[in-house]
Amino acid sequence: MRALLVTSVGVTCAAALTLPLAAPALSAPAAHSASARPPSLSPESPGSGPPSARTEAAPPPTGTTRAPALAGSTQSLPLEPLAAPSDRSVGPATPGQGLDRRTARPFSLVGVVWDDAEAELHGTVQVRTRATGGTSWTDWQDVETHNAEHAADLGSAERASGAVRGATAPLWVGDSDGVEVRVRPEAADPQHRSAAAPLPEGLRLELVDPGEDPAPEPAPDAPADRTVTQAMFAGNPVPPTTTGVVPEVLTAESAAASAVNADLAPLGAAVIPALTKAETAEEAAIVAAGAKPYIGPRPRIVTRKGWGADEKLRERDFAYTKSVKAAFVHHSATGNNYTCKQAPSVLRSIYRYHVKSSGWRDFGYNFAVDKCGNIYEGRAGGVSKAVLGAHTLGFNTNTMGIAVLGTYSSTNPPAAAVTAVSKLTAWKLGLFGANPKGKVTLVSGGSGKYKKGKKVKMKVISGHRNAFATECPGERLYKKLGKARTSSAKLQGR
Image (tube, rainbow, N blue to C red; front, side):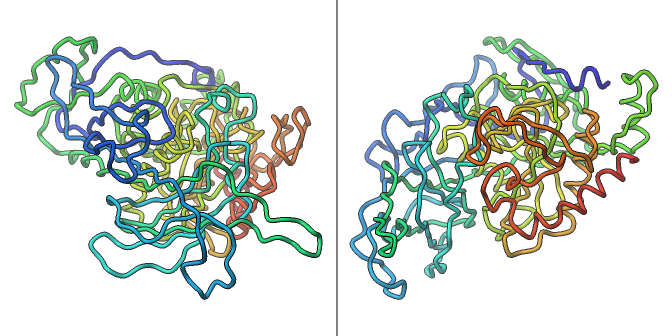
């Protein structure tokens, strides 16, 4: 139903859903702040962060049963001056900041943040880590420093919240409990008589633990009763079940994040199922008054519930734009050392880094795609709706952002990932009448490459570098976008 699909609709949900054999469990609510720590840490614990960033556990509503916590955590460590490189092979000493080798609570993703979101880090960031329970250390790994172009637009409510920080791209390192980091500014240029650029103020190392994976969905032939029961969330008891299975209690935030997709899948679903082209076209044609829609078959999409998003981290309300005229393709720059089974953990880590470390309202991208071609719901608000993201500075309005998990500057993206981008854009752009092989005029909100208010003609499927002076989505992935456009248009029947 096209008229309904493209309408920006907010959802208010005051119901708690009870589902036997529940999927993601509840996590403790946390204040919207730059960093957080679990309640088990004392204020004196290393990396615990300031008292204002503490996460306090709230008791469940009266009469409800709380599921085991799946919440992750963030350790935020202030960097210290470095007198000299810890590895003499890197050459002469350069002023910088960092941390010597140290043991930490387990984490899987790292990044560096600083106080001023407008400040840029001109220099290098390198880390090395030690696998949990191991003794050997990895080689130094580079962290992508230019991440300002992945952000909410200047002047937007999200950007003006006062919580946003400057940040590097996050780097996935796998299950680790040891870390060392060094941040060095660009060297002075004696030929041009320029001094080394100072490092931003307030540099901190963020160590993110994604928490546990959500419980798997029951098999289709499982005997459990999957009937959804609703009860008012304002402290009322959950109705008893007849199955003897302890019900899951979803928060209002979790219920709302699911409800915006209720026209595509049952409430509480971990997956939005794929449709055939005929089924997808039939749905679209109902609203289009019999007109032939150019729309690709709806692909299978793992919901936020499916990858275990903690809905208490994000801002409660959803933000929308009027349409989806274009898609910007990104790479997450988190590295390629993950398995597809780990993709949900990668997503939860990026989500926590975007919200708790970088100060964004939610996960930045509208969708994510892993190396096996699985498609994931990103920012909350409804996969078929025009949700305002924070993916392409200056061009978030009336567009969507798709992040392919990995780094594709010198590594070819898997064919499955490129195919998934084609499938996703064929469906989502089709809902809004956009031709994947066409061009569209967008108005810049101010990106550094284009001044605010400038009208820019873009390809409907563009790379991030088309909107900002960046290497994203990586040279190798960028070269595949032509194929993605052709395949997407073909799936639409063009």
